[in-house]
Length: 212
Image (cartoon, rainbow, N blue to C red; front, side, top):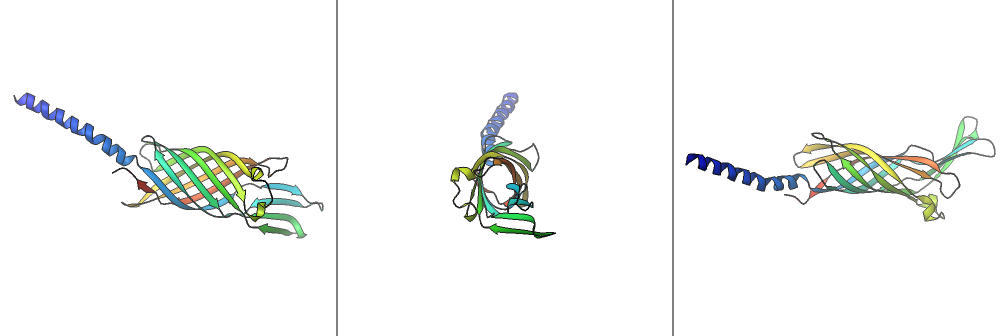
């Protein structure tokens, strides 16, 4: 009698665990919305050339502040799908070497912006606060710097790769640090495309929605 009672208790315990497990899993796999601020760095020249005077001239996006948001939807214990939008207040700068005189560079700048969008996979190694990201992206320039240029000439498709980590500041407050690079080719309507690498370093505050 005691044997059957003990077996029954074990069955009830296993049943309770089976009922509780999905709830615990759903608590971990919650959708997150993350607003963030970022620093934008242009790692390559937009274009390069030589003036009639023989001086080198470079066209660059200016390093700038950026902000945006991302939504992260988990599809497993260590994999999520993430969409991100970023607006960088980056203008355009032209620099001519020795443009003013020997050893004195000349240049000018104009206001502008760059918009980034991406859809990427986010992979988190087991028992780690680190994560990796990879996916396709779209990059669109705008503002006074590109006034009069066709939208299709300043819109490009490429890829994004990056990494980051999550930190618990308090039990209820977390931050995400992310460094990501958009890689693509840009010609601005000209005949020659130039490889581009744009770096975004961001700090965000994830807000969980759903779950328990």
